[in-house]
Each structure stands twice: as structure tokens, then as C-alpha cells.
Image (tube, rainbow, N blue to C red; front, side):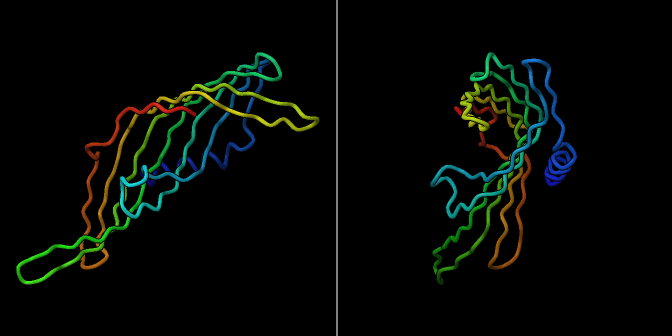
Length: 167
């Protein structure tokens, strides 16, 4: 998964100036950096992870106000959480503190409408639409901070393979 992160960053750096326009059709690279995590309560102590996405986009403008477009993105996102568990035994209690890390790689295909409102030389834009997301791969690790050891697992069972979301 680290290789995917490096590839997305390198593509972002070498293609900052790449884009093209063919009359009303515009296309070019699309790169995003953000934060991702699980829904509140799904992972105790969730403090999020860096989200990276890279791919291509294309938009067709009907006029200066409205356009429709699609993007094809490869997105690396995940979550981290710090948890302490207590085990009650016949002799005494023991506790273990560990950090859980989830990394998921998705192929995402958002279909978007773009609304532009020209105000002088400025043109604020609003995007809305739907996104279909397909999981390509996943990794899970649990690292104990009290004691020693690391548990790792590839292709985590129980995560959504297909997601749809409103943007």
C-alpha cells in the first residue's frame, strides 16, 4: 500500500500543469489529499489517516453555469485507533494497549454535476453527484504498545467491497 501512496504523490507532482480543453469538453488529472476514518464509534480512539487519491477527470460544459463530468480515481484511505483492553483473571487483571490500523484501496467512479457562479473574475463552483466505490485491496495491523508483538492481516474480511455515496 505504501507503493501506491508514493505513485500517487509522484504523479501529482509531475502533472500539476497537465490539462486540456476541447471546446466544451475539459479533461485532465485529478489528485486529492485529505483525511479519512471510520464512522463514530466503529473504532475506539479513531484518529484518522491520510487519504490520497489520483486519477483522471473529464467535464462537459452545457453553458457557463452547468457541467456534468466523471472521474476515475484510485483512492488509499483508512483509519487508526488506540485501544486498551483489560482481561480479568483468577490471579489478577492484565491490560494491553494496542493501535489498530486499517488501509483500504478503492477504485472510485464519481459522476458529478458542476455548478459555476461567475462573479466578476471569480467563479465559485459547487459539485454534487453520486460515487460508486469498489474495494481493490485492504490491510489490517494491530501493534501492541505495552508488551511486544504485531498482528498483520491482508484482505480484511467484513469491510464493504462496494460502496455508493452522495457527494
